[in-house]
Length: 203
Image (cartoon, rainbow, N blue to C red):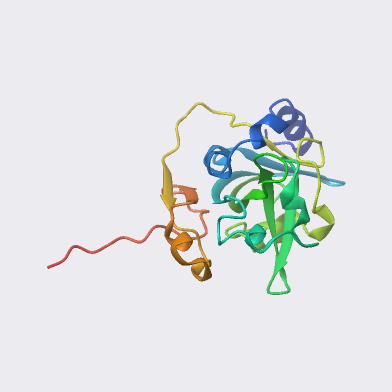
């Protein structure tokens, strides 16, 4: 899949359908690891393998945007599933999420890092850098992820990935929710935004 046009055609045949997203966010976050994220552009397809995600479980999850109720900013989170929820942080960085679960539940999966496959020339190690590299911004908020412009394709290999579960990043305000292992990434992958911490044995 080295040519952007061929890559998109092959990926469309494996494009994830609505039913994939219509499940709990933790399951979707795990199963998106190793999937291909594809964005169609006038210059051809951009694509990367998902190597890091975070699950946001719904309004009861104090780290989720929906925990404060429905607002114009987070309305897309409330469904239906299989749509892009794109928001801005710090006034400069965009973050891409896939809406999950049943309509009205307001859960989503944040895409934290990609391993570039085609058409990506800058870093994708972190949600803001990922969106910048793929040209994703608020104009993509609400986009249907089961169409051709921006979508995920199923894994193209049966080779198992060693997936690490760890606490989410930057959600200390969420109290006990911040410690839950709802971030998933491929162990040893160089494109992950933050590696696991190695504890030194006590002397």
